[in-house]
Image (cartoon, rainbow, N blue to C red; front, side):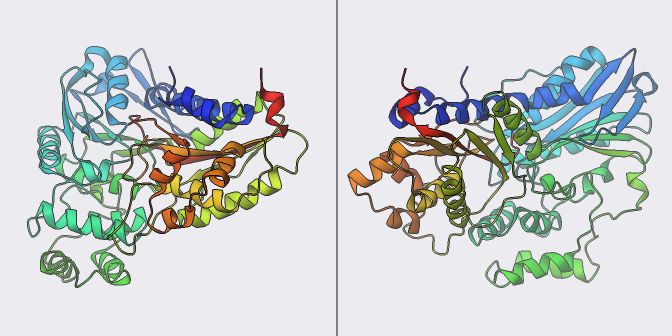
Length: 473
């Protein structure tokens, strides 16, 4: 089954193009190969009650399950439902209970024995998220020193695990999150502030279990560079940041006064020591805590590269650290595309990471997302010959690109032809961040819907080294 629900009409409108067909297939293969269930299957092995956990670097952690009195599952994130379901199926009847929170709209696809599932708001937290967080805390509070807790953490966990400190409200945190996202703050910066306004983030979740209780956190990273403390705001990870760092971020973006008294007063109290800091490295609460990375953007990119190598001779993996403004990334891709089409043999390039769209003024802003904006920007500068068989795709792994219903978009010589014939003024669409409507007119949007995972974004640039005429059957 195709991950891209409109794949057939997309290929028809943008083809015939073997480059596009191969690129879309590589994306779908990578999404499936790095699915939460597959990642758990590789990392989580049980034989004769011996559990072996393997992280992305091959480091193993081994423990005997029959040494524990009870086993629980907790967690929050876009992939948490599938992760928990897979572990439940492996452990069978060994689970004593649990509670997880997943995004509303994913659908309760996974029945998990004795684990309560809460659906809540994302990307902005809501009251359902608070209820889900309290259920998680309730599970942790009943654990003993001889218990084992599996914590499933993935992208979206910060929004899905809201439990504000008493000094502020959920609305205060929502306003802060919206303000930081609007000015283009990085996810690391957003999460650094979130940690210091939460009762569960920044390692604070571990405070609800007794010292000695074993906590194993399985993590799928949606943050460039995989800083463990930033993924879902690191609920089980020692926090290196401080209230003072949170204040610096708000001041950096001119939000210190704009956000109002509750936020700034809480952070000021923290700087004075009136609110307890997040737990740091060396704190005894982390003695039996294991944070294990099982998936990241490199996982997706490597899967795509593996698929492409089976179909194209030359494949370059340019890594998973691409960030910055989406429109600047698009201009870079156009330059890269210009170099690629000079090759007389098939070549593919894979790039991973996550860019941002900075909204200077929210008035008049259209519909779109970072991947579509990158494609739109690339379309303005990519000089591709008519009928040349090359394709560029920019896609999310979670299926949600900005405020649109698309998961990304594509660009081919056919797209460029549409632009020239219709005389669409792409600059005006780009200026108002209205990429979805522009690309919809060009029949270039890719619809994936929510995928139930999140490992950042993937870009594939592919050239077959010749005309699309050779792609016609």
